[in-house]
Image 1 (spheres, rainbow, N blue to C red):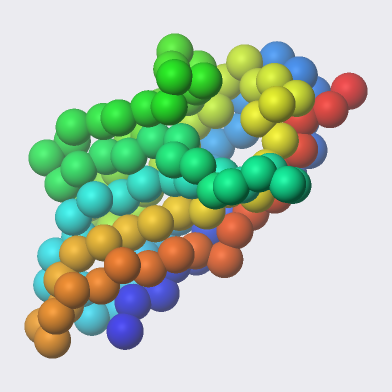
Image 2 (tube, helix red, strand yellow; image 1 turned 60 degrees about the vertical axis):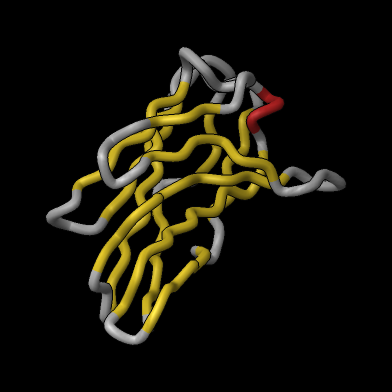
Length: 119
């Protein structure tokens, strides 16, 4: 079983910064893709950023140049550094981690952390 614990959300003014963290623990044989999604009220969940085990990164167009995803493989942790935040970035942010255990694949979601950008 694999568990994810997120931290780092909160209230920030427009133009400010936040850093989200998501730590994976459990019986992981591999940790492959790690990603951040977000869901605003009334909207579908959308991909924000994704990083592969090799370090390749993908970003939503709306966050390119402002957000940076990174990972610490020794800690099985993924981070999302969010700069120049805008009110439209307000959402619940979820991490997603996929890989393999000794018994088969896993694809787990974090509990979500609220990010609110408002003056």
